[in-house]
Image 1 (cartoon, rainbow, N blue to C red):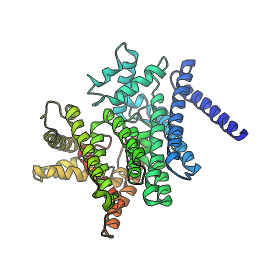
Image 2: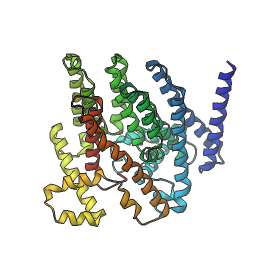
Image 3: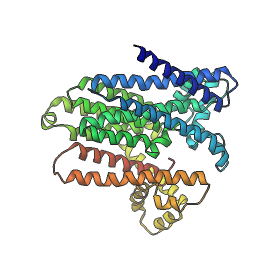
Amino acid sequence: MMARWRGLLSVGFSILFLSFGLAWISPDLLSIQGWISFFAVILLGFGSILGSWRFLKNTEQNIPDWVLRLVLSAAFIRLVVGVFWLIVLPLWGYGGEGESAGYIMSDAYRRDTAAWELSQSQGSLFDAFDGHRSVDQYGGLLFFSAAIYRFFGGITHMPLLLVVLTASCSALAVLYTWGFTRRIWGKSVAKIAAWGLVFYPEAVLLGSSQMREAFTVTLASVALYGLVLVFRQQPKIGVSYILIALALGMPLSPTFTLLLIGVLVIVGFFLAQDRWVANWRVWIGVGVLIGIGLTGLFLFGDDLLPGGASNPLVKLQQWIENTARWQANVSSHISGWMQKIFARTPRKMHMWIITAYGVVQPFLPAALFAKGKAIWWGIAIWRALGWSALLLMLLYAPIRALRRFKRSAALGASIAVWAVILIAALLGGGDQWD
């Protein structure tokens, strides 16, 4: 009992000191409201981690305590990096508007500023879903950010409030990735996956900024963990995890939700044994997922392609074609090398070229020889090192899985991951910050 009380006191004092430190760094250091705001959001972030841990303990047997410590460490690392951006970018950056405000992502700066303005207005928070397409195409993250600022914010705009929550949510991906991989490949692989996600540069970068990917990556890991539970004799709990992930993902990004449904169908097929494939309930579940995806595309399709066709499949085709043309245009302006390639190749090949170009980004040799401010050069190398190492493993994984000549979870995961990579490469093209 005494040990438990000592633990609670230790956590309480840690939250107090951390909230005071963040308030001191932020513009609102002289206001007691600033300290209270950080104390509240840290409690919210810590509570979400602890609550998720408790839920996972209900489904996992003998879950080691080091997993919780690792998740908390991941959250702390992302928060520290977010503070680093806030302090260093105004001093060492190029002096842009977003950099001067301490934002690593220009999208995050525009959306977060709009969220603060909405929170201080007399308007409804639901206005985030209407009239803010230039800062948030879907409105979900803008709504969430504005709600945090309105109910927890102080008298001035404090961007670190959102970073506390993105860091906490991003860290939860470590927990559910561990649970997902442990169920399929065992403890050793789960440990490697969890530790890798803690330090993977792109995960740290997104978790330290006010970006939706800090949430969507975690929602994907939650849904995949739920999928494993469906095939591991806990279908009700598993379905609950999946539905929660899809419901939370839709307002953040219908595109992400559609991709997630596709990933679940692919991985689910490879997880299923023959008796599951012959089970009519499985096919009903697949039909429901596809139905949800098509319904979402019909309802939210105008966010992807305003004024497009009403047929969901036609709308999806139009969106892919328009996206490919747009990204080819963007990449040709970014890279002189790409301009030369486009000039010498048929137009029909441009979509495939831009996809291949997007897959290798961020490209390590290009990052090493890039010119610019030291801080951005270091960030480019940091990201490229992480992606280069991961890309090698992703290239090797399907080759190893195919050697066994049978359906396996590894093969299914490889197919799903590469499908997402190719789509992301097509959507992002040569823009490493998209």
